[in-house]
Image 1 (tube, rainbow, N blue to C red):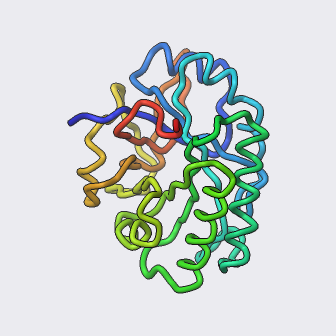
Image 2 (cartoon, rainbow, N blue to C red):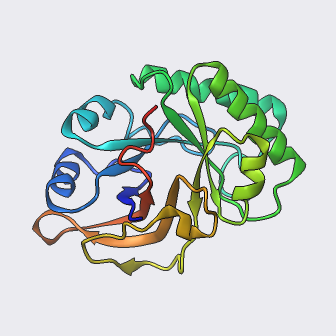
Length: 220
């Protein structure tokens, strides 16, 4: 089963680049970085949801929470999970995401999934769900099963890449079955990091490339 190609980058590329990509490539969904978050304070995506959705983009909201490896805020616990989950839900509401939409907690580390991180992830998911949104988690394929076991209802966005070195990727961009990432139940798969792709007039962007089982990984 083929997937739906998407991309993410932590700084908003601009309206012109987004319009060009939608019209000229097979990319149909994008990561949407909520801010302020504990480990991401760039607000450039904020305020663009309505126009992106109207243009036809699928949107996967991302909340870069407490981490266990640098850089970022390194304070995972049950208490910070509850607070950050509430913050993620409030940001979702402020951006106009419909009730039931999925927001993904970004975890940058590989194994192990420490007890503090387990407490954080569980509390974060519970707070998001209590506020009327669907929790999801972006994590290594080596953590996916353990994260899913904590909260089986959360959507899993897996990262598993061949290289994190900067490299050029030609269009059309990969749209593989997310189950091929090594975690069969993956909802999305980040299969390329630091990918240089072409935009209008021969310009380039550095992005991460993804594939999802649906065209809009954040939809209810």
